[in-house]
Amino acid sequence: MPRKNTPRRLTILGSTGSVGKNTVKLIQNDPDNYKVEVLTANTNVELLAQQANETGASLAVVADETKYAALKSSLKNSKTEAAAGFSALLDAASAPVDWVMAAIVGAAGLKPTMSAIRNSSVVALANKECLVCAGEVMLTEIDKSKSKVLPVDSEHNAIFQVFEHEQRNKIEKIILTASGGPFWGKSLQDMKNATPEEAVNHPNWNMGPKISIDSATMMNKGLELIEAYYLFSIEEAKIDVLIHPESIVHSMVSYCDGTILAQLGTPDMQIPISYTLGWPNRIQNSTKRLDLSSIGTLRFEKPDDALFPALKLARHALSLGGGAPAIFNAANEVAVEAFLQKQIKFLDIVKVVECTLENSSINEVCSIDDVIAIDEETRRISREQIMLLNLTRNL
Ligand code: NDP
Image 1 (cartoon, protein in one colour):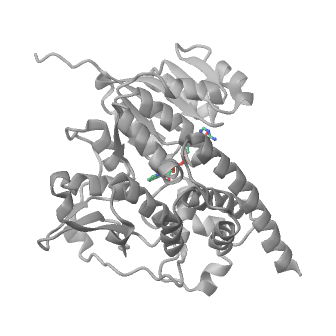
Image 2 (tube, helix red, strand yellow):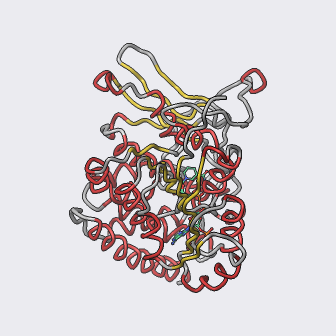
């Protein structure tokens, strides 16, 4: 009988989220080959404890300190150690493991992801916001570390799979595909009074609330454009976006000989996660196989900047440079939260980001502390912009 390999030691940052849960599912299909060291959540201790018990994790960390007692109590009959608070999260993210899933949502994931990059062999990067706001600083850290960073976002994962590094000077452009989200084909009038429930209802993907709203505004594609700029070191003008409502072609790379290479698959995050888990090999999973004959038609259209101005705004933030992408990201996080809390309307999200960019000074970014300072200041300015917007509306 062939000898089994030593199980790979894994950490899942944000295990209770949509990407985190898909990651847990994949490793549960093949428990002999993986040893879960660390699982983390923000507040959801019930699911965190359940995942810890099911996977036999060594450590479970909840970022919200007030949840420590609840976590400890849920884990009282298990071998999993409990910890809480931001510094415990950072310590856990620094554990030297073979593979880390970085799936905390938003800029909150920045420091833990950076710790993972410094200390683990492979980092599967789902948290696009941290690359958007820390850009060059994060790339420098990746270069200094021995860690291999693999994109989880389905578009960037697709590009990674068809990007011929040795031919990079022969690449004419990369083409990010976008589903268009729940409001594709709708008018501004239709979107004006869209509710959070309608906006999170993505036609193809089942995701967490923040990225679902980002898909509806197309801020997600803006963030992904900036993510692609950093991940693949490609100039902004060479990154195109195409609306592809079926979400089957996950992205493409166009070469100088007229060839376009694309990666296709059903819209299921387990496919890109599985790719990063197996890399550099492919591993078996039980996802639904793509049956193109039953789909029949694949459509592609140009995005409409008048209906979805977020993409143009992302290009503008990138052209401003310095801390502008961090401002773009933090303002969007504040605006999405305000929309989910019903404090602003759907179309206000992009307006808040635009006004925040206009009212912020663009400073250089040389360190993570610079990024965090920009992030905090932007959140203050964005909240001000939301107040102003609501005040002028009520006049
Ligand atoms: P979810 O909202 O579903 O999950 C977020 C995870 O992060 C949860 O585990 C949550 O814990 C944890 N978390 C939230 N805030 C904090 C905090 N302040 N400190 C520590 N942990 C925190 O998000 P998704 O899984 O949808 O997305 C995760 C990331 O992956 C995002 O950056 C997103 O853009 C990206 N992504 C997601 C895709 C998807 O299909 N969902 C596709 C491609 C990229 P708790 O459950 O306790 O709140």
